[in-house]
Image (cartoon, rainbow over all chains, first blue to last red):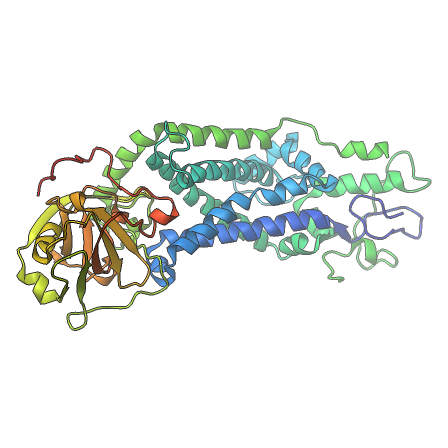
Length: 258
Length: 241
């Protein structure tokens, strides 16, 4: 019985109650592939842009036609992993989660504005409010970059928009994107549990509790409902006690278990 | 597995709104770009005046040149080894060194430099030998209709029709901004085709060949216009000379 969203192995306490295990599955293989290939294309796109745009790099690298070609095609290919990802139900489900704002997401945003960082102040489901806005914004920004990029690539595609205007928007948005992407990477490495979550697809229960408490609650509830003979109402969970016999596996906080 | 439906998220579609908002912002940016650009250009002109760090050159559309080269590395040519060869349909093929070029009448042209990639350097002085003077010296044969320019980077090439080349604002330039042209800017000698987009102004000029037809240059083989006239360029007169 491994179908519990987010679990790899059945985890039963001796009492017979199901619990979400210590390692929680956060992203499927398809989702990680989408992320990895999008990230790689984005890296190519940004690196080639830097070689075209920044004087010292341009002098070092030269080969303008080659770099332009790399930039154009990595840019054009950028949405492809996303489109292929739509074939995956896991990916589509996560897109729905990213799209919808729960009431507690507003609380998260307020806390972020006031620089409050405790778990209590920052409730979040599988994705927090910042990730939701980031996802929508960067999707729009990539589309604008593609559109203005195509206008520069195929001169005279839309004669009503001058190439200079397209370049103006492309250049400014490029800097905004670089800033936002830097923030995305910084966030990914702020907590050592975050980047491995995307790399391996698994996060520890402790990490999930810290960053996405409502998601853990949701998984726990599903686990209970899936367990045979589950009580109608969820029993209050015993306090976390890593030392208690038989509970280590389910409550150990961030124990690395490859 | 109806239980799983519990996980179906509800609430306002903020992600979609962020996406559409960004698309709207992009469209508004395109519509307002001409106005915004004028303001931004004047801000940059002011900012680069008092910018000891040089960081303003990183800003979009910096008020300066950007370095373009189509090859990995460009050899350096100096006083000792620079030559400009004039060949093809001419009565007197020539090989000119820097002192030879300096000994000829010098012409100074002040014009805006405009790249197809949007950057622009206003009122930039270039000085050197008028192409028409060089052509007179070499003597173009009657079959000659166009010029093909080649460069010592080993890859770049450009062209002009004979009629274009005889304008007084077409230079074989030795100086830019009243200083010898640096290697990064295409020195020691580059073409300066003032009324045209800057890709026509071949850097690292090493050869001029008179041909009986226009031979497309490096970027023109890759989709650029053969005639790189700037918008609003006076195509018939000779510019301000």
